[in-house]
Amino acid sequence: HVCFYVHVAVTVASVYVYFFATYRTILHMYALYNNLKHAKIGCATLNSATFCVAVAIHRQTMAAARVPEGQYTQTIYGMIKEQKYSEVVQILTAELQNHPKSRAALSLLGFCYYRLQEFSSAADCYEQLTHIHPEIDNYKLYYAQSLFKATSYPEATKASFQIENPTYQSKILKLQAGIKFEEEDTQNAKSLVEQGPSDDPDTGINMGCILFKEKQYEEAYAKFNGAMQITGFRADLSYNCALCYYMVKQYAPSLKHIAEIIEKGIKEHPELSVGMTTEGVDIHSVGNTQVLHDTALVEAFNLKAAIEYQLKNYEASQEALTDMPPRSEEELDPVTLHNQALMNMADNPTQGFEKFQFLLQQNPCPPGTYVHASTCIQHAVYLHINIVYYYTIIETFANLLLLYLKYGVKNCYIVCVYHCW
Image (tube, rainbow, N blue to C red; front, side, top):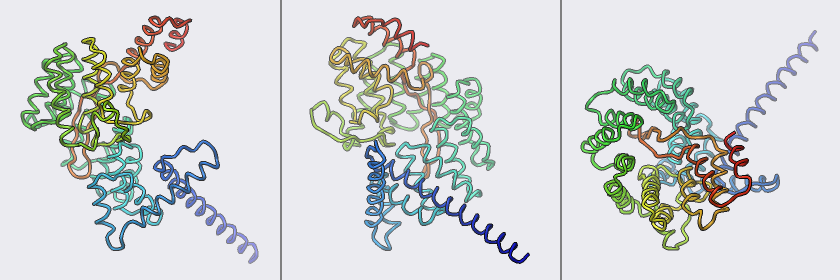
């Protein structure tokens, strides 16, 4: 009997050790996955993948080594202030390997992921924080907002109902309104917006988005312009105004708003290298950062290109696309990719067809215009709905069909029917 009990004890201990080792291995593999994301090196084979992991770990170790002893907090916050979010991610990922439940590391890592627009990774950080510190409602809100930005709408809705603190009621209403709007539930979105305080600029902005969706462009413009009278100039609101003018074919006032957005962007953020590509200067990608999103420069240049194209100023439309802050092709949003394909078709039809076909293979965006929430987290937390003019799968398909016919592509009907199917 003694031998039996000893055998059982050894077996239980072995199983415990095995599962503990497996758990540590999974954590290590997850850390390596994050390393790979930020190594920015293609890994086509097992050997190159191993090399990438080694490079990522080396970069991470070197990044951590650059932090002077006793100045960890000061250095991290200094790098965040300088918007060196990718470097901070490397350092904090290394820190989490040693302290996986560090509140400071997870919180700052979530913030950096959010600023890098890696919303799923941000949601992962905030989800862990909601489990570690369930008493802190801010983390629950940041988790719901990150899920929303990651287009995980059912999960975001569920997360928003976990916040019972009445002081968060206004923020939760705005978040839920944004979710309903994205889900094409305009009536419930309007009902939630109307529950907000009438003197809150966000209430007017959100109602403007709903009016825009209902094709009441003049009324929508009045809401956006009225909000800007309260808040002062904001690139996103100015873009919304420009878009309203565009929809009623009043191109001159639309271009005026666009010019103001571009002028502000160049003046306040010279690091975004506006116009450098057009001038022939070889500039590295500025990435899809939160700063780029906040300036609304990509949206403004796309709208400018669309206006010039409608006016048959084809060279000006091409120049508008090359004037926007430089990004690598894999970083381009669907709108820019669509416009590049359409407006450069005469010069490079083969590449244009490839881009259109690529877009048709992606998950389609909702028809026409749709809204998304622009959320600032950590410091000033609030949410409002902001219009963005995205391509639709129907427009892409229609353009591809017309271009097939124009360029005399054989069996174009078969190809297009295949895409439609």
